[in-house]
Length: 434
Image (spheres, rainbow, N blue to C red):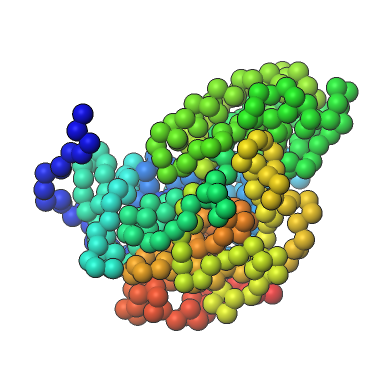
């Protein structure tokens, strides 16, 4: 069999020319697109799924893990919060109703005037030297080109930055290992008045049969075994974060396929465990599962500044901050088993203050006209385990969108834009350091 195929040269139709082009419609890309459009830039968003929101919607994420204060995240929370059970113990504005969130996100994109292209994959880059000039897209309409002044890579794995030649490291610095993947699912028929809801690896309950987390490890087949259960705003329905696939790479389509198969086959065994051991789950049954596997970690791109774990522990305030009051823990899922990795810190995380994200971590080395947004910004493996969560990524996206619009307004590249202009816009929107 031949190792290579030479694709014939062909002319591609230009599907559009825009000022700001965002690749990826997860929380970071969605926030970037809306923010850029609101700031006056002609903006296009490309998303390969049939909905925006990424893991928050098609991935069936249970809730907005981690936190920031102020900014776009707060607005999205308020617009998408499900008040169906407001005033009861089940209600929390951080609980995600994915169906409502899908619609709210589409409405906000439409209101801002974003040119949205769903069912479209960003497959390659258009380069002129070290300048990124556009993206090659693939869809039912064929292979086309989209040109743009500024491009925001919010693809999670940084597919655009990778193809543009931005240097990166993959996974943990010591061995390249990456956090495991998870397929979220929901069960119905739960008696939530009797149920227990362990929300972290370090939270457990003493049951008649023994310690809940220990029971999980003993009765659910490896590599699954931890028990994470979350309330929803719908009666009798609980979100389960319990499937687990190790030693897989989210930038490899065969590994993505493997992870989906492995995790999907774990679901019924986990439900059997819940029925047998967990109070309130005796009559539970599967009602839905994510159509999008949860990938936690792949490429860490090298930017003008790199966030370290020490920066987070010290709550460092960068001079070029563009996200403030970010807070979470070192949420490192075990890379050789289930549960928390030995490097992770949850309950005993020492830093209670919020930290900042620098603009420099969003500017990739060597390539111009490109901004990073979301979990692909420049940071160490351990720092990434903190800022990768959706609330923080949402406000990173807001900053990227504002920066891109300012670049277009003043004829600057992201590298030459004065970060104080971004801070002025954020301050005017009520975002402060303290």
